[in-house]
Length: 85
Image 1: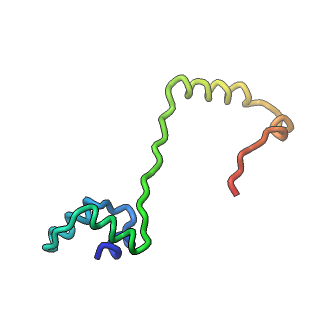
Image 2: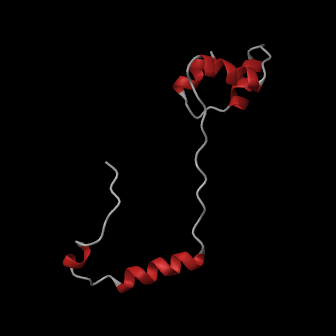
């Protein structure tokens, strides 16, 4: 049931699984769920925390954009762009 639930909905937390199993009449711990999923080849991960932009950074970006708004296309040919392939 654990692996089936996680396969259908990867965002399921260990706490959700514990609660579902308790409602079904089985008592398990979070560690048991983690071990079971690991044995089945499923690994857990957390979304990376990204700091929010501070108002100073927003203003700096806006200033840069306004300064370069009318730049000719030829000027941008020398810029190295980070491209994910």
